[in-house]
Amino acid sequence: MDPIKISEKLISFKSITPKSSGSIEYITKMLEKNKFECTHLEFGDQKVKNLFAIYKGGKGPTICFAGHTDVVPPGDLSSWKSNPFKPIIKNGAIFGRGSSDMKTAIASFISASFDFISINRKFNGSVCLLITADEEGEAKFGTKKVVEWLMEKKKKINFCIVGEPTNPNKIGEMIKIGRRGSLNGKIIVFGKQGHVAYPELATNPNDELLKVCRVLTKPLNGSTKFFQPSKIIITSIDVKNDVPNLIPSKAQIKFNVRFNDELNSKKVISLINSRLKKTKVKFNMTTSVSGESFRNYSGKFTRKLVGSIKKISRLTPVLSTSGGTSDARFISKVCPVLEFGSVGKTMHQSNENVFLKDIILLKEIYLEFLKQVFVIDT
Image (tube, rainbow, N blue to C red; front, side, top):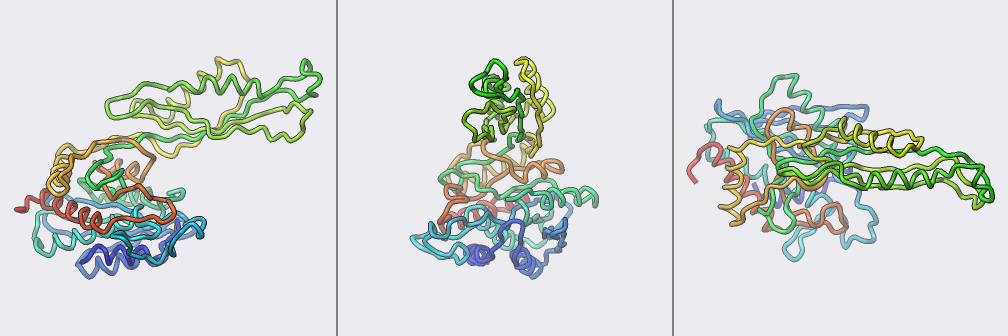
């Protein structure tokens, strides 16, 4: 089946997170026609749609492809040269919201799996897909819940590829072998309100806040073999004071921490608290964890994916842990997982697009990987 035709259809669904808008139903029909067993899973008050589909071959390994059909909103439509949900093909590329992140990767894997199964119906193993409509938002009722369901049902997966757009410029440049953890926080610093003409009678929380900011600028630790140092990034400084002659009673900052595999979220919070206490500033801190750092990949399957990429694209991929969080953090709890998909240069941008040749190339890499995993002559 043509991955470009599948891509066009998937992009046409206005599946703004966490809506499927028919995209998962469309995928289900394709898979069922090709003998996949499909299970629809809905979670949360909004009944967020998810799909787990499997083609059962022999007793060998189960290889999974994970992806999401939901997309971020298109933003200012005047900045688009075409309707973001009416895909157009121009200058050798397909334009539309979700083309890079990550509907074309889903199309490439579906096409690759169909081609593989059509010529190897009795291969020794199984191929499955985990597709969600809840990745771009809070991701509470998507892959996270499906993984819990897999664990509850004792369904085994041996290896998973998440089709995130990992390549900076060319297909084959980069595989993500893990991700940094992510923690968001807010620190409120307390002072004493007063008149600016009598600062000796007040305690300016802005002065106290500067002390806090200074101790947060240094990395929490150094780099590790595959990860950058853990860093605190201040994202907001807010006093909420519009009165020019008033010293406020409190001020706050918001921050994000991207931390490596040497730390977990509890240790990150402990290190920050330790630094803050040394300032002698009166403060209150609240935090929320988006995901822990992880690196859970199989050397065997990694070598096969790298080999497939080299053979098809003639590039040697960098093994990286850069970038933000992804659903791989949930999947890592049940099996080794890597991320490899399309080129991400235009993801989430106006006029998001992917070259048609890259869709075909990605499909051929996925197909070669399946052949190598199941030891099919290539």
